[in-house]
Length: 155
Image (cartoon, rainbow, N blue to C red; front, side):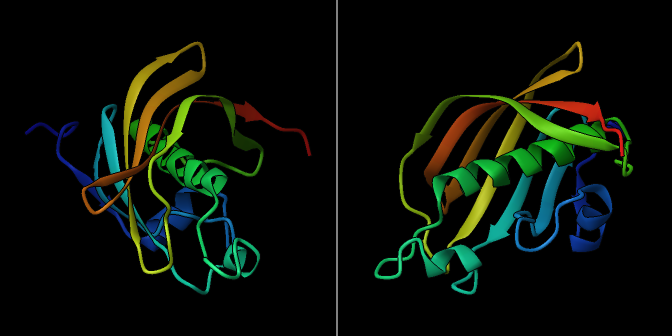
């Protein structure tokens, strides 16, 4: 394997260094495999202690679909940033530019381990397009095409 195809891993400290998200919206716990410019496989451990379970739903806790999409987008951001060997500064942010074909196949519940698999489809004119899946075991929980862009912000 070459340097660009050797899988990279990231612990929570490296993730915190690269993503601006913090509790309660940081939704990636570990990167188990990242190949620059190609793909990432990351993990979100879903705990009953997550604040959204208090209201979604008290009688049957289920992780909101929008947060599953956000977890996939955070993994995609890590892939894009690491592929460019970039760390965001305080004047940069990554935004959703689009979500296409989002499908939810099974509920994600406390105790599940969400495996986020994202591949880079295309990077053109500052828009990154990803194919993303969130799995629990070997079952697809959600999938979508995600488009993201990086922007400079004024303080």
